[in-house]
Length: 333
Image 1 (spheres, helix red, strand yellow):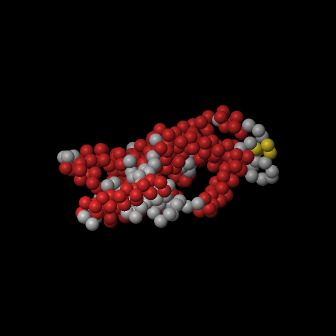
Image 2 (image 1 turned 60 degrees about the horizontal axis):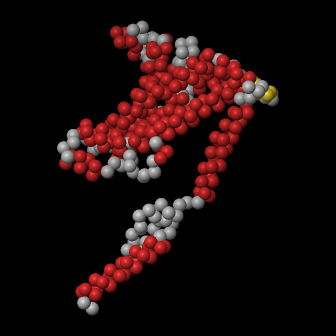
Image 3 (image 1 turned 60 degrees about the vertical axis):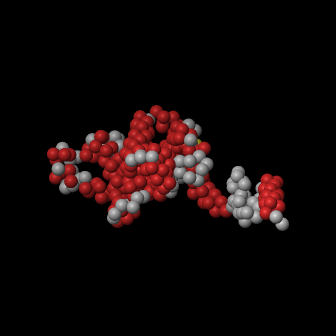
């Protein structure tokens, strides 16, 4: 066989393999998968797991999330002190709730704490996460020390900072030139500032971990190309790192929103809703109604309203950021 005829035969076999691939959607002997078939079929004929794999998680979610939520919905239309049988009250709890000035103030405070938490924690988490993803000297040791607050319980952290900020024996009593009379928890602005600071101190490491993992997944070839083009560290951060972290930023912010709207432990230990009702958010007000006033019908209505607000805010964030339309497995693509 001449070289020309051998080349023609190879071309004929390649054309036949390509034709079979187009017709069957299966890769030929070369092992290459046609474009657009990666989602429908995988090498070896292994498809996506069936629904049966999700049954345990679905049952768990139904028993411990949907069923309690349904019970709360029913209780929100009743009068119940925790003893005896609930009495149907119609919309009485909801009418009182919407006319309650403390409830409206608590809802606005919940939104304020959430906004402040997102505004403070997001930039700090991004910067620390990107730094922790690098190869600096002693980076691993410093990161491990920084992540210690994440291992502590919210109760322990709140008790710790309550002792540190005590106006009589804590740091403010020794630095009156900075803290004035030292009673930070005695005024609304100071109490809100303390709540935001304590939450930032404990939960920033969690979001730092998210950004650290996302930053390490960014292809290094992007930074190499930027260096060739003469881009410095700052330009690389704003034009490569931040766009590539878009998915992680949205995920982190949604977690912050849900956590901020449901903050309870920190307020219970640090301020107990004071001074007065200045730091009484919706979650703490629900606790007061249920376990101090023994009005579980009103408490259930507050809980349901809080769930609706948190869900609405999360959906708006997902829609506005386009997170629901992101399908790529690579960050920012």
